[in-house]
Length: 89
Image (cartoon, rainbow, N blue to C red; front, side, top):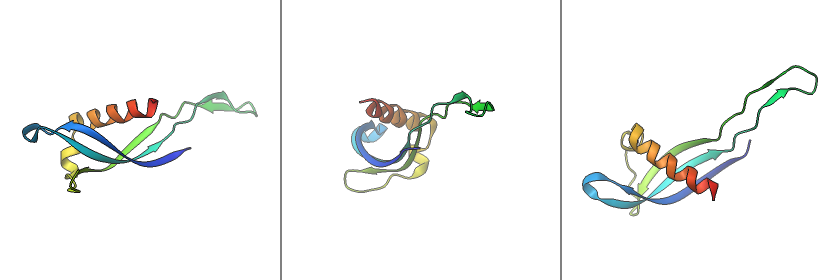
């Protein structure tokens, strides 16, 4: 599996604080395609999807946002959607 540790700067709506540029520190692991059968004829395995693990979110001034803020489903889904669109480029 191919693993990449990266930092991407994206713009997020921080509610009362408006839109802010934040750095997303994350690990990206490329998935593997499955196979129906192994070379010896045994049953194969399903596809393994790509994985993104968010490690930290920081403001431009270096302030790290608490995990409880960015780990909520709405915020995390937004971040993952943005990161996945960057991976497609």
